[in-house]
Length: 397
Ligand code: OVM
Image (cartoon, rainbow, N blue to C red; front, side):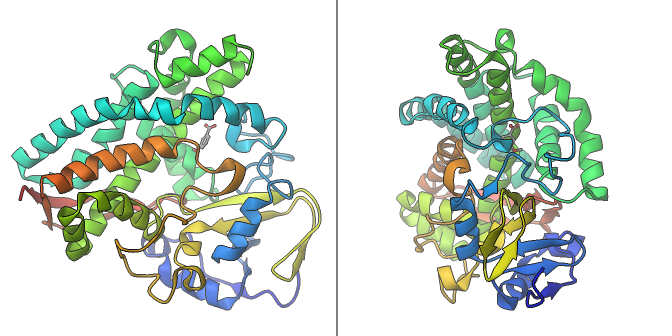
């Protein structure tokens, strides 16, 4: 490690820093293009430019050694490695299978059923008036519409998919007490999830079943098909639940910004991207160097883990201007890194965006206003940033 790298003693994974990471992110960005996280013995990147450089260079900053702190070249993986922990040439056919199933046409076909459910959901929320934005809105939508889209049984979804996602996403961060806790709660869901990845348990016509058809066509193996359905079920639930909760939280915090969306419902898309930038649901992950490499004036040997804080990069003033900390629906936030970048950029994002777009467009169309009725409770997780509870009153205009 070069002597010039600023050392950060703070713990980004403490309760306080997870609940409000931005002051520490700012100090890390100001300290330099790369910092040494003393507690974790790892170089961390918190600025937009270096995060982009790393994510764009998949051959140097690889994923097959895992995207958490443990190096899968030397340590066993806790589960069979999937698309996430793959590099070219293994990655290509897996990615192709996913993009074929999550095609623009395939995603467009989902809109009608999403709209039907959202209309019902918004109606029932308005009838109740006082709700919890997390368990009554954010969780309900993906559990129903994404679960139906993949083609899994309705029974058992919430109890299994949410703890399963929380466990999975924990592997992107340090193995601390919080990690152990999410693993303890998630472990018993693994079997339910893997059972529903089997072809005989997937509803014909759904995304899961379409992945299996690609195995029939010889594009991928049967083992890979099961792992791709697993990827859908691992990555597609919690992330969108958190994202919806984060948009609702922005609406509560910045009522004047939500009012702009109510004025012009076509701004819903901008509010969603600005939320993804301003409060990124997925905050951080690792890459591993495949060779000796120079970056940010530093030389890293091969097989070195690097930690990327995209939640910080999305607040970088160099990229977003002096008002980067402000939530502004008028901003062109589309270039954020919340879905990652490069060959591993979130493949499911059109579905997640569709869920959010349908929901917030309908809320805007009905001129719904939100009012906080209790303290929001932060969701503490090493990788995901969101809310566990958002007590609110919801009123139609
Ligand atoms: C997987 C997977 C793929 C992408 C993301 C992810 C938890 C998991 O293969 O299960 O996040």
